[in-house]
Image (cartoon, rainbow, N blue to C red; front, side):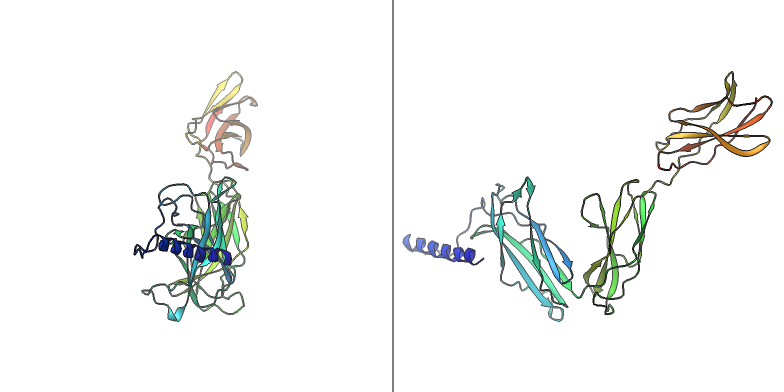
Length: 353
């Protein structure tokens, strides 16, 4: 860090000498770097708070404000402001401290955009923090300010416990125990809400909507059969400021299709030389994977499944029939879930053999 700052001072001295040699033209303004070397401003400065530290991340700029490619970032300047809540003035300028100089490098590594990170682990309870960052391609070519992130830090509220999740059709239902203490065991003196986090596959956890006050949450619009993992984070509010608390352990669930296909219609029974043929209308529902055929007799009111067919078939021959017996037939539709969901039974079709 010292060597880089030293290089800046040396560069200033050389530039000043060059101006003197030029003959004292009276030029007093600082030199303006050409647009072809000034990086675009960083727009994705983000943060996560863990215990008493904040982790900042941002993506390396890829181009200059002129649109030319950047081969290397020489350094980053990270600015921080720390204000006690009792001294905070919403309309006053933010008093950023002197920049923290961080190393740069190539903006692309292994064909992927490079992400920079910095952890600040000197958070103080009851303070409001502001961070912004600038990128440099040289000591005099600095980008404009990034987006500013801000948060208030208090002692973290404890993690929610007892997180349970139940898979439903295209969704999941979650519930957990309320949080009443900080991590150190003291009672929370703010209002606690909860942020639900979700991931699928190898992705990172992402927030689902805004924090909720209830200790239950229903997530909908999921893909049945796909595995999802959830966490719940406690959030403590102090007036308009919200402080991230600890996260629960993760739980995993697979939503299951619990909706059966429509009941088959148009069921008929026709006598043939091979037995009784049962026919029905083809289902217009894309979820239908097949049909079950049921039979009862006039002397036995209990239905027995006598066969199954897959779509697109819409008929079945009952060859196990006896003379002078009246048979009653009903058909159900099934989907391809495991186990399959089965519709209710159709209207009966009857025939005496």
